[in-house]
Image (cartoon, rainbow, N blue to C red; front, side, top):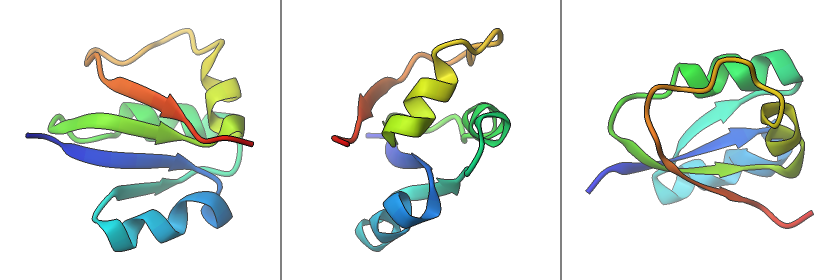
Length: 74
């Protein structure tokens, strides 16, 4: 089984590291796009903050890996 990653603003994702998630702090849209592209290959689930999800809606370069993605409630 793969690992879980959380991507978004520090205040929303930092605590998920305690549960074993790979945390990628990204506070602006470009950082979100870079963060998603930098995820390790063994990530199967990506948890996004609402702001991160919005930043990825118009990403011209989606990642090569298809992963299950969920968005945190606002």
